[in-house]
Length: 267
Image (tube, rainbow, N blue to C red):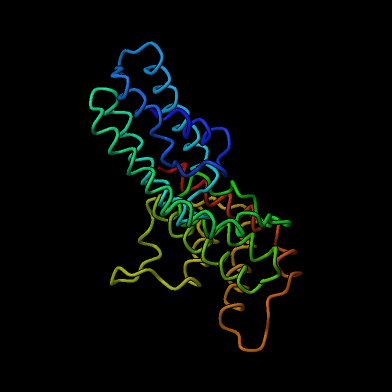
């Protein structure tokens, strides 16, 4: 059915990612010879194999272009994934539907995935030389924080230390609120009206709250991370320097890791 194009797709994503008209080659040959793609000894297994190869290659692409780093590519690939599942369900019982779905996949790969990948190629080829924090630190947390963590490493790598400090502050603030929520004591950081307190209040209550169980390094680091985040965002005359972040490097990791542990262990 789609042997030629899909086989090339699986073997060489960059050159054959975009399934062209050749992907219909076996379908056309089978129709011309009036062969059944459901039972023919040659065409049936080839078609099933081609679909499996395509799905495997698509899965690899999804892994290589995570949404937190390549939002546009990931969105386009999600649409292709959805169509790929429809293709697998319709084949070979509903060949007319399968052919239509395949055409939609071809169009989507050509019109959207190609453009999205090419626009992201430069970004993807940039390898962060200095990873300030491990990229897997927030693997079990929700997507937005993982994207922010990737931006922390990128900004540190390129010397944007004020931006890096602001992003770390955002991670700490989110994780602190999550820690209070998951520990069942979120009211301690809310106003009488039910709004969250300012970060300074949240930090003070977190570092003095035995129920959270933060270690000494984390308790010492969190107020400093807030300070430098505020400095990078609001101070008109002072700057966050590389030495500021380097000095807090180990304790930053400890603080984030302990907060992540609290939010996951209390679920």
